[in-house]
Structure formats: structure tokens, C-alpha cells
Length: 322
Image 1 (tube, rainbow, N blue to C red):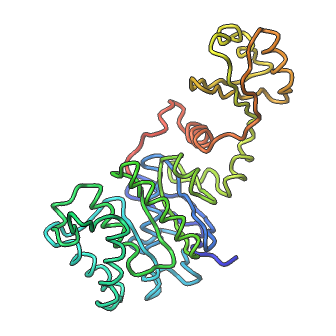
Image 2 (image 1 turned 30 degrees about the vertical axis):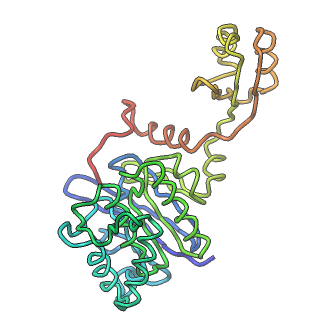
């Protein structure tokens, strides 16, 4: 499968801070790829190196088979930055027309595309044409949608979205997710960074988890879960039965960890523990078992365990922004 982005052992240091360390990634075309990590992990620095905004200290990057610094290559990429930047006193249409023309889209075609996107994202309605409003008149979420249009208006082959769901309410976040999947089905490659595991789990074909500038794991979601090496049971009990099973769930020959989220208890089995033995022990303790299912660990669980392993004090979200 051809590669949308190929990263070969890139590193970047700012003064005494190693933002990215010897990072290699292979991102095939036509997929949704998640670059995941806590704040300060190196996600934004990596994206800026892909876009040739900053140069790596070592290593190389290719986009669609060409060096990322080659003229015209970055024009095939759409970019939604984490730190949004729109000309606040310009009208929405003028800003978007300006961004489209920077990418070589003829004015008439740009205007047609802009109107279509404004309608799609409900920025033009019978009550109000927000395309004629100045950017500063828009809410933060509406400005986010305008910036998103700016990333797509030139019909790029690779779309990079840095924390795309920030400032969006659930309805607009869902609209954005729908568009991301449409772009994938149209053969585009979508790369987005986030620390929101639920969004990544629902959207991504493959992910990379990085922390402290270092890659911890990458691969398809199934590969990442399998590599975690934890056998997990999703357990639901009748409300009155919970007090009866405390001793069973404290038996470290059966269970190493319990995460009670009220409706479902996630139970990590001890190495080589037989899940049927756990089930029998629960029933012998008088539990009324409503659900007992062997499941793969969630992406959230993989993320927390991998990142926390690098933070002996448990502060997996610490560090300067990078």
C-alpha cells in the first residue's frame, strides 16, 4: 500500500527539552490515523515537522512519496492547527477565499466550494449568513468550523488535524467525525492528534501513542490492543450482589486490577488465570451475574497504562507543551 507519510528517525530538541526522539512512522494512504499522547508529548512538534514548518535535527520525512520540503508537496496537504489563527476583522468568505487562493484554487471555483462547505456546516441558514460576518463575531466553535473549511477548501490528499474536537459541542463534533469518515471513503488520508481516546477509538484505523517525545506503540487498533497483553473481563452484577464478591475480586491469583465504572466492572485477570474459575468463584459467592464477557482492553486503558509507565509519580499529563 502506498504511503501518505513516511517518517524516518526524526528528532527535535528545543534548548534542554527533547521534544521528539528518534521517531519513525509509516502512514498508508486512505486511512484515518491517530497521533495520540498527553499534553507535551511531541504531537504538535511532529506535525510541524511533517509540514516543514520546522526542520528536524535528524531524520527525514516524505509526503506522498516526495520529500516534505520539495516545492508543491505541502500544497497537497490540508492543515488545521491546534492554535487557531484567522484574520478576525475579515469576513468569513474573504478569509476562506484568501486561504484557497494561497493553495492555487481559482477564485470562481473557490467561491463555489466555500458556499458548499458553509452550507454543509450550517454556517449559512435562512436566518443568518455567517459567511458575510466578520470572524470576530463568531463563537469559538463557529470559528473552529471556519478553520476546518480552510483546511479542506483546496481538496487536499492528506488532511492533518491537530486537536480538531476542541471547542466543539457534541453535535458539531459528530458532524466533524462524519466528514472525517467521508474523506476516508473518498480515498483521502486523515491524520489527527488528540488526547481524547473515545474519539480516536471510534474513528481511527491505526494509531501511534507517544509520550515524552518517544513512540510507545503503533499499529492498527487490534494490534495495539493485542500487544497490551492484558486479559480482561467486562463484568456486570445485580446491584445487591456487589458486596458479596469483594473477596473474590481481591484474590490476586485471579485478579490483578478492578476498575468499577458503576454499570460495568472491568476486571484484569492475573497471568494464566482461568476466566471460568473466576466465574465459578463469583457464583459460589452468591453473585447474580448479568454480564461476563472476555474483552480486549480499551484504547483508553492502553493509553493510560503505557503513558503512566513513563511517569513514576503517576502524573501522565505533565510536561511543557510541545
